[in-house]
Image 1 (tube, chains in turn cyan, brown):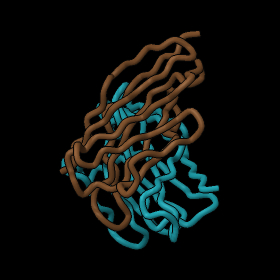
Image 2 (cartoon, rainbow over the protein chains, first blue to last red):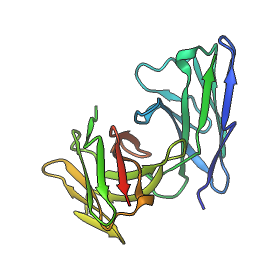
Image 3 (cartoon, helix red, strand yellow):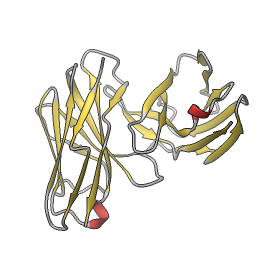
Image 4 (cartoon, rainbow over the protein chains, first blue to last red):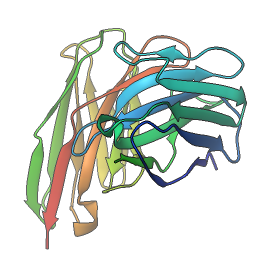
Length: 117
Length: 113
């Protein structure tokens, strides 16, 4: 149980285009989801906290107008990278917290590798 | 804010040896400390976690110890196997309610046959 999926698994796009990444909790409801970014050989850096039905909370230094997050339902959160540039190339990973479960156990998605040419 | 330091950055051991990875944290309010294993290009997998009301937890070959006074916690892997080779991340919770995690910098473990 507690499976999280992401789509797409990898995407290559041209500079200036926008890319949408979906994060779904397949067998549980997630009132809170997190979005992370991981550059090669580095740790996971939290970008934002996404709560169903409300605006996302962004970490310091993360541009909210560039990384649009929508958490429209208890099983889906989306991250849109707007006007992507090569420096946005990274591994984007989401996680969800089981509603009604342990308030601190995060279940991670498989990640989306974004390459911006 | 919370700061988590992790050592060593790389660790090479022979199969069957033990491996120890150490982390320190700065926020005394942190109360949840998970450890994740990440293989190249894959999702982080929770391997063990510990909460602040416990000093030690063990699950087969894996154990975690927590010293709240010193603000450090450690991962111990015994009888290492080649399939244990991966990057391991510690993390510490931040905040209340649905808690954010701050991750350590990671340890690349290589177990040689």
